[in-house]
Amino acid sequence: MVERVLIIGATGFIGQALCQAFTQGGSRVRAVSRSGYSSTLDVEEHVACDCTDPAELAGLLQDMDAVIYLAATSTPGSSAGRPVDEVTDNLTPLTALLEALQANPTLPLIYFSSAGALYGEHPQLAATEDTPPQPRSYHGAAKVAAEQFIHAWSQQFNGTATILRPSNVYGPGQQERDGFGIIPKAFGCILRGDPITIWGDGSAVRDYLYIDDLVALALMALEQPLPGTVRTLNAASGEAVDLNELFAIAEWASGGTLERRYTNTRMVDASTVLISATKAYQTLGWKPHVPLKEGLKRTWLWFESTQH
Image (tube, rainbow, N blue to C red; front, side):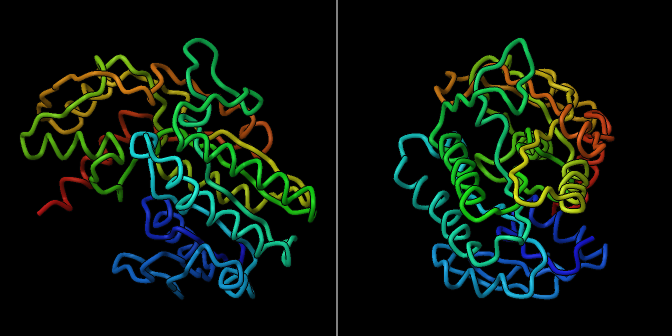
């Protein structure tokens, strides 16, 4: 495991899980967020940063052995009608980091992109890393642009990067937030006895990946870099279900009942997104270990224990 790692976007769900994994593995973590404080992070250093300032980011890169970029403020739904905000809030900070990395091209970068937002509609064949992107949202379009900026940086400065395209990540530690994460939303509704609003008829098919499996892939990617290249890897469980089936499993895991209320489908949502993670297995030997039913059961036990 790397000795020192910079994690940008450390206070989000995935960021916190990575901070914990690196700290437990003996790495020294410099966590970066907008606020510079989180009572839930146990790291050596937690700093606030203007992530649009390349000079400030360059200072944070000093003495680091790797950098992980997870900072994001939007979802496909929240980005609707807001292309300028998507560029300003999500694409500009990434390009600022790339400018800072021009002086540190040998520093391995891991960038968390998105599979579902990037690939769009794939109802029959599972999307691979070679599948042309078809984003339906500005959020997805910004992810495509960010990946292209990373490729251009690597070409110019011989930079090393791994782009991870995860499916819908879930698990213990994911707080309920409006618009972020259907699984904690479902569990919150079950716990309170509230109905859940579903865009469409519940037939939308998605892949769901347990957080520990994604963290394991990120660690493996850092341990096995490909110097001077950009490597892109899907991260998916291969266990895709529609929303109605997902909610049925959530009811089983919790022992509760979830009332569904259906509304009109959003234009930003694809009906079916299937994702292949074969390349991650072939190149790194990675495969997911936590099936959906077990993952939802673990998540419910954590969710229930943390609600007051």
